[in-house]
Amino acid sequence: MESLTKNGNSIQDNTENHQNNTHLEQTSFNTTEVIMPGIIEPEGLLVRSRVLDSPAAGQVTVKMEASGIAFAEQSMRRGRYYEQPKFPFVPGYDLVGSVVATGPDVDPALIGKRVAAMTKIGGWASYVLLSASDLLPVPETIDPLEAETLIVNGITAWQMLHLKAQIKRGQTILVHGANGGVGTILTQLALYAGVKVIGTASPRHHETLRAQGVMPVDYNDIDLAGSVLKLSPGGVDSVFDHLGGASFARSFGLLAKGGVLVCYAIASALNDKGNVLIPFLKVLIQLGWWNIMPNGRKAYFYNIWDGKGSEAFQIQLRETFTELTTLLASGALKPQIAARFPLAQITAAMKLAESRTAYGKVVLIP
Image (cartoon, rainbow, N blue to C red; front, top):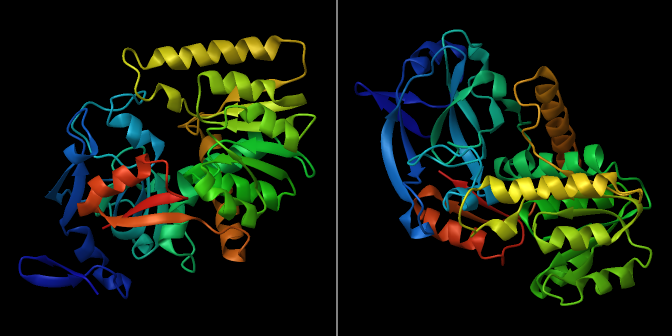
């Protein structure tokens, strides 16, 4: 078991009883973290070590066990993520880890508990300071890397399916990027709910998708719409699209009467220049126009942070994550981990995540 040293004394980081809590709360932890110094290529990401502050009131120190690479970090390194902090900063949208120290007003019984958190930034570090109120409990029987896939990706997938699209058994949906971090969970959740799934992906992933019950379509198919309509002649009941641009219009056109388009990113604008808000505003205007058209179809932009800071937001987050961990524990969900990399290999990890060749989530470990 790893130990931490302070003033020459060795302290186990996973205490066996609460008698050591006071010592842990006073311990400074050496954290290794990834720094995004500016608009850079993956090779420009830096790794450094420093002493982490002790947790303040309302905070805990979490030893990271897994943190994912999401589309958000790909946008951030290009300076294209809305409301990202000024450079330099530590990226990392979510994480799973164990509590190793608590602030003066936080229940010390949390020490040793495995937790998850949506961080937006800061997750790519071996030790992280978090607000105790943001912690989501993770059952000890669940593998931390698998639990990591359920945070941003899993919550996004579940809420889009059940809150935005409100899918029903027997419907047919189209999932763009069915091999991705969100797509692999979204397709499983839909199939579990009795929904037929058409998924776009590179041909290299089609066999895997078919084995799971997904009807694959080549995402580079020049007649993608025609291929989808061959599988679902009357159109589809919902489309989940992260691409943006012309893809949103094509997706909306594939909806059956009463269908729902759920947009959740604008990947086509990843390498654009200029104000990052412009593509987003254009999308909102287009979605608003579609929603007032008398065709019975609806279009939404999903943002996982909607309602952040409200009690309802936190309750929904916890309920969704609990639902996902329950499905994982039962075997109904099988998270797809494309690869795992230590923080020190962040360049290789980022390149794989951006390659569009991975099936599932690229995960970082300490």
